[in-house]
Image 1 (tube, rainbow over the protein chains, first blue to last red):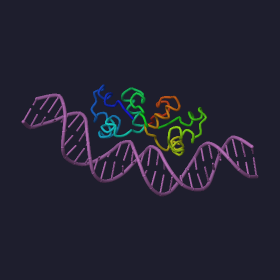
Image 2 (cartoon, rainbow over the protein chains, first blue to last red):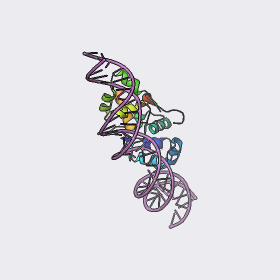
Image 3 (cartoon, each protein chain N blue to C red):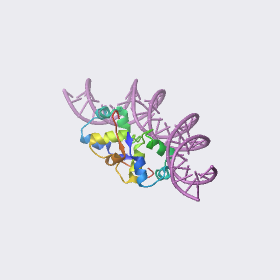
Image 4 (cartoon, each protein chain N blue to C red):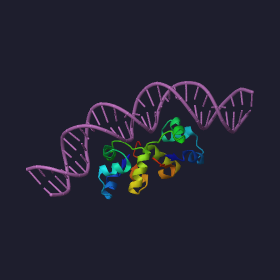
Length: 66
Length: 66
DNA sequence: CTTCAATGTAAAATAAACTTTACAAATAAT
DNA sequence: ATTATTTGTAAAGTTTATTTTACATTGAAG
């Protein structure tokens, strides 16, 4: 699972902490997600898509081996 | 989190078991998801979107209280 | 060169996703 | 009516997401 979170967050000029607050998770969750340390739930993905104004498919993409 | 899985699966005339195999999860996972018992990971949501040929947003939707 | 804001990271704990096994209920088919 | 397929459900277990606390690193700003 690859994601564009870092880029999209930069576009909005948000800090990890600000983004975390907006979608109701901890800052470490954002940091770990950006670092590709884990795959978020669909609920989180939808909230992120909402904040960034882009469809989930443009934020997350499956890779080889899923 | 509401979802359309049951309807979309009906459109493709797939059994829970067939769908489960296609995306590599257990049949109970499909059943529980359709029953709204839990929210799948983004990886699963993307696979389902792929199978059904629809964007994640058309399969899953956030509700009041997220 | 110090200070401050932002980020990286880590360990321990909790919650939630997902599997396996197993059985019961519903529905379709013969 | 019986059998076979599909679906509902449940308990126990494993794995993964997410939180909390806490500290170390980076980078910008003064």
